[in-house]
Length: 392
Ligand code: CMC
Image 1 (cartoon, rainbow, N blue to C red):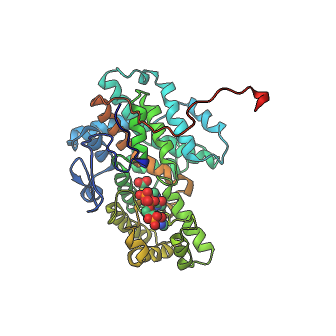
Image 2 (cartoon, helix red, strand yellow; image 1 turned 30 degrees about the vertical axis):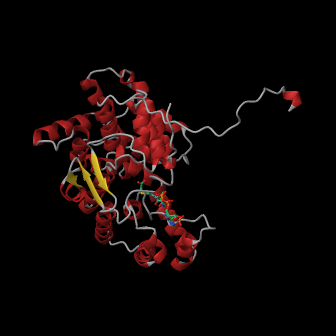
Image 3 (tube, rainbow, N blue to C red; image 1 turned 180 degrees about the vertical axis):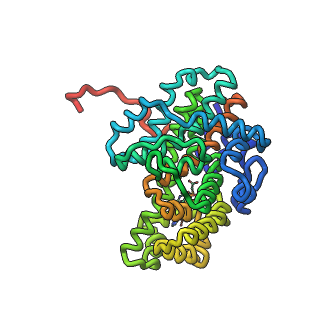
């Protein structure tokens, strides 16, 4: 049976081979299918990147048009699903609502339950997911406001359509600053994949049981929700607000983060893999400045963020542990500037990560990987006899 080595948190365990995302944490390199993240973020559209991740190559013009048309065609969700939303309390966290809604799609498309369905049928599920997630995400927000839902406007591109469903009134012609659309497009691209992180590993392990793709993606959303993963962007803004409301004394909060007896950590700092800098943070920082300038926003939270960033670069504690601002540090500030409420931040991450989850699921199933099933070392009682309840 051999030895079992415990690797808590799988810090040194490779779970798969993958041809999707290359990441070098020491050098701060991130590439999707060989293309540097910087080039993709500057030049590509989110759906182009989604296509690249899922199908392995950048699409030609006609492939992209076909892909976009197919996704546009499926943006509506079944009217019955509106009732699900209405049954949730207005205060329901949109990540919980989104995970449930995505899983519920499997009830409307039961053919997705067949792991042996044709490739065309599998592609349809993929396109439906990409098409419907923005609608469901925006509706979960509208529902939390008890506002009427906005139907998708298929004349808009992916990002603008999402913003329209979030922010405009039904039937209103939606106008938005192109700098904002461009920043959001970049943000989604930067979040689109990140190899075997917690939610992606969850997707691969759930998918390895041949659970349907909707349920599988729903499990990824659940994993992403946690504050140590995708929930960090929400935690960053909450932390900045807390520091601001406490008088803005950055030194005090940095000291708390360094104090080992204090559970407080600087949210948006540190990364399991990037131990030099997070290349996504560099791109987002610039997009963040652009958005604030274009919208003429001066945000005191950004001043606090900048002070914290300076600390990380200069302070011995942070230097010794290679703690730098990560992607979540700046993304929250952009989301806040464009009016996305804090509890929707992780939903934005899910919107971006969806093509990565799909690509990883597709790769895993096509490679015929076995069901995921880690081992353990048992540390409990050896054996004991059952004791009747009145004798305990
Ligand atoms: N503030 C203060 N100290 C920290 C922080 C922080 N944010 N992050 C790590 N440390 C310290 C930690 O206390 C430890 O110190 P020591 O060696 O003295 O015990 C050392 O740095 C190493 O930390 P670790 O927890 O062993 O590192 P990890 O690789 O297990 O954790 C992390 C990575 C991202 C969970 C962690 O840095 C963290 O909790 N950061 C804050 C939450 C956050 O921003 N998460 C978003 C991650 S990026 C988005 C994503 O991919 O999901």
